[in-house]
Image (tube, rainbow, N blue to C red; front, side, top):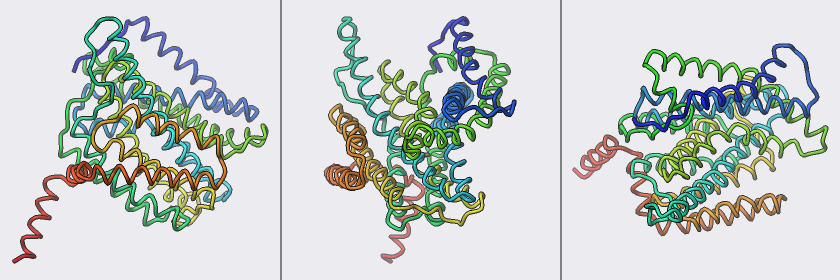
Length: 422
């Protein structure tokens, strides 16, 4: 595995800055001092951001000792643990404080819509600008300006298609039920098992701090990796709960809808490092690495994250199903509809500039027209365009489902069919 390394001075500076950002949150938590809600939102939000950076560095460095699609999926999950920590805290607290139920749904839907509506679109923009930069300098640049996915990513697309269907159940029944939880967690487990069998391709080149750490001798590298995981976990533990509480209290203090703060500010802090890395990959014309990492993150958030919310709610004293009011049901519906369109756009393994622009434009509309009617109409637009594209690309959808099923399952289905014919 090759790596784009940095100097030791740059490494030291980046690590020092990240630790400096995390230190106030850890120090405040250990001291027991309770800052004002707005100050707490800033300090603990910075802690969540720093934790995401540290976990991302550790996860990327771990790829020097792991390979294949399974490593990519598992490490993509580790990199977004701060997002899980905040959302599961809201779901857990909702078990004893019902008003927190809406925050669990808000954080989950915001993270997913931000990832697809902004993250995926930014990858296309960065790739196009990177190609233009090379062309202007007279260097060899790719003829295409659209992002391309390798064929092995059809596995993620197939499992995302399964999850996309199940995700319409919660807004229809008004709850994220235990049965939905079982189905989505089962899909994620099947996804991990499937890519473990597939082997996949070598993981992408490392950049920045992970690239430097990957060059260390194995013992030192593994020590740095596990030290990073431990440090990231400590920062998450210190920051996630007070950050979640500060968001709610700051909303009341500032006269801002707490739902919106939880929906957009919390995911922005936890998702930012992953989005930045994806944009850097795309800028360097590694489009498959960029969109592939975000696609894997989407799969785990749209399966495992949703599936664990009812479990956290139950652990906190609630029932086995997480209830959704009309506002939350609309937000889940809108997120599910956006997922269908995003899936349709990637299903042929190409993500075009026009498609990215449309995805971002529809994402932006929700801020201009934030009322209930607009959310329902926007969901209809997502679904109408998404299903139209899926119908036109039904062969690509079939290929993705076949890739997700795997050779063993397909062989079993064929054998079962032959027995029935006899």
